[in-house]
Length: 366
Picture (tube, one colour):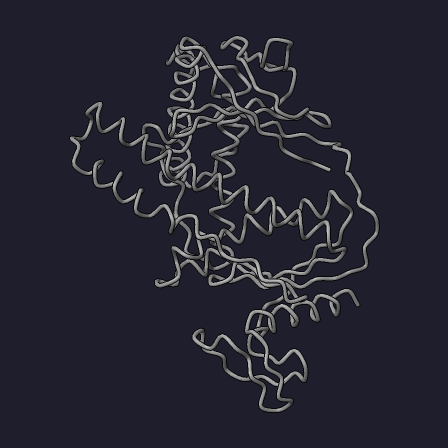
C-alpha cells in the first residue's frame, strides 16, 4: 500500500534563502507554462502537453539563467503540475460543474517543490536530507520511514516552517485481528459523528473556540500599512493561530478514526460531497470546521492498513426514513428526534440516520 510521511525540516539561513529562491523560480516557471498554454489555445487552437513544455526548458534556461539554480527534475515537475491543473479543470467541465480556470500564482502562493525520483537530487544521509543545489538540511525523523520512497516534496508554510513529505509504496500493512462487528456513521454539525451503536462523538468546534483570538489578530492586521514589516509580523501571527486550529482538528480526526477502526471490522459512512454542502450560507463555517473529508480520508486509509472493510453509501433519505419500519417523512433540521407515526419508534435524528447507513452498507455487500 502507499502512504505518506511528513517531517519537520530545520534549514540554515543560507539554505532557507536558497529554498525561497527555488520556490520563486518555480512560481515564475508555473506562470510561464500557464501563459504559454493559454496563448497557444486562444491564438492557434492548439493544446500543449507537459512533455512539449518540458522540452522548452533548455532554451528557457538560456533566457533566464537563474533557472539553473533549481534541480532539473524539479523544473520538469512544474510542467506536470500545470498539466494536472488543466486536467482537473476539464474534468469539472465534463461533469457539468462551474469550474475555475487555472490561476496564475502570486508572490508567496507557490509553496512547494517536488523531487519526483528518489535518490536523484534527494536522499537521506546520517546528517539529514540532502537536496540538490541546497545541501544537507537537518531533519527530525520522529518515526522511521516505511516502505520504498518514491517522491519527495519540500513545503513552506505561511508560519515560516519547512516540512518534507515522502510518498512511499510497498508499506507493510499492520493487519488487526478479524472483527465482524459492523458500524454505520452519520456525521453532523451539532454532533461530530453518531455511530449506529448509539455512541455520539461531540463536536470540539476548534475554529469557534479560537474565533475571538483570530478576530483580534485580524483587526490588528487590517490596521497595518501594506508592505510594512509590522504587517508581515502580524500576518504570521494570524497564520499561526489558524495553524494551531488545523493541528488540533487533524489530531482529533486521527484519534477518533483510530478508535473506530480498532473497534469495528466493517465501516460504512455517507458518500457526501462536502464542497457542494459548503454553499449553504448558514452552515458554511461549521461544515468547514468539522472537516468531514479529512475524517473520511483518515478512516479509509487506516481501515485499509488494518485490513478492515470501508464503504461509502448513498445518504439519500437516511434522515427521513424510519430505521425500524422504513416509513419516510420530512425532517426539518430543527427536528432533532425522529418520531415514527407508524411503529411508534423514537430515536435521536442522527442515531436513526446511522442505523439506516448501516443497513444500506450491509445491503451493498450483497
